[in-house]
Amino acid sequence: SRRARESAQPDMDISPYEAEQRGRAVAVTAAARGDAAEAERRERLLLATLLNHPGLLADTVEDLAAMSFVTPAFERLRHALGNIAAEAEAEAEAEAHARNSLQARVAAVGLAQEASALIAPTGWGSGLAEGFVRAEAEENEALAGWRHVAALHRRAALDAEIEAASVALGENPSEEVLAQILALRHQRDALAR
Image (cartoon, rainbow, N blue to C red):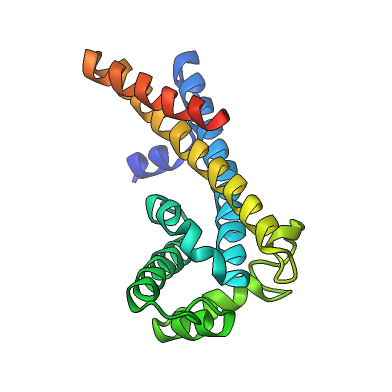
């Protein structure tokens, strides 16, 4: 039908405002893709470090539990590592954080493939130039690197929350939303110190 043909054709007569809005949407989508790619990279670094240095789990479990990951497989692995750390602490097993023991526990919850891909030279973790991730890195170097990447990840999450709250403030101005933005900015600024 004529209507179907017209709706299938690109809209060449759009207002400058509509064009600007479409351009912004494309820019936001591109920025989100870039942010997602960077988030995935941080997630790979955080998880690969813990898989290669399981002794760090006890020092990082609270920070790990407070995070959320955008990559579904990494989110499942993050959650599993948190549970494994909590179980190991409850059981007070000295060897619970040994690399082989951690790998066995990850396999037991069905995430062996994801974990192996993170630490394999050709898997998700390949191309990670950061030396602290590697199994041969010193524990203190690995912990310092992990904490740095965790702070970057938290800052990115706070930036996203601030952006969402700012949009909410524009749509529905209120003292509550403004207070939320100020609190989030304070948290973000505290990370820089």
